[in-house]
Image (cartoon, rainbow, N blue to C red; front, side, top):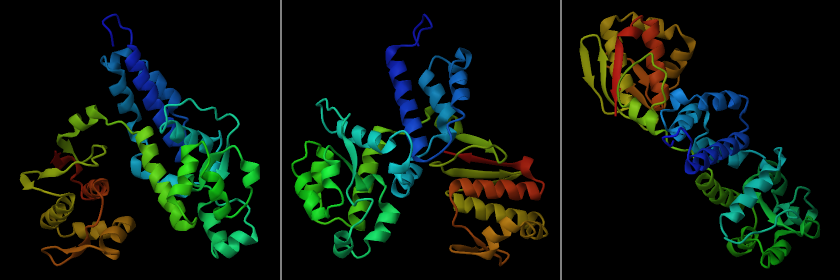
Length: 326
């Protein structure tokens, strides 16, 4: 932000790009956008922007900004073609424009289903499980492309479509003929994964530098923060200071501590149906504790933190538990 209080053009462009990525990912993941008004109002509060609108926006959006995994999972499972606002065509146009410097008029282009929506007998003969594949993956990005010959293509089999794709002036379509000799489930999955990586790069999730910097250090177990990508270094409970090197070790150390504190604590934990099921009932990666009890330890960092926080509340020691991360 300039000394006059005006926001620079570069800053405006950067903020716009972040909003573009945010909105596109929300739409693909079919998440609500009704909180956007509050975000814009909060962004306009100059007293909290601290001269950096980008950092302020990223911080505001971080909790609801779909990460790469969620974005990729949605692109592999969501029928993009059926979503509103021509989202499938937008995605394909953006992908094509990212590959060429030429200005292309896509007004009369149409979204083409490589495996057609309505299968004929030729498709069923060529691909015996075509109906199931079409139902599962027919509308995902990997089975879609752009063409100006949609009606002519109809529901022709892939070998016939491929001949037309070879002479397309759309690189996205032309490369299908080059890269694939057959069109089946593996082809759709492979192309979806490829286009997904391109869309992740085009619509990136920005790094929240403010949050990353502020997270490092000591935290109370009652704090609500996302610690994905961070590692614990110590668990502090009352006078005990336990060195750590993983979230799994943190869970084990905590469970050992509350047993030493009062063995009856385990009965309290088992009395909670969700904790009992997660920790004691079904075990993929069990750990036998010093008291002989076996617990499940195969959890993500955020789940470990949630488990410890809930157990600390049940055992009435939530205010006494701290941890450090790096």
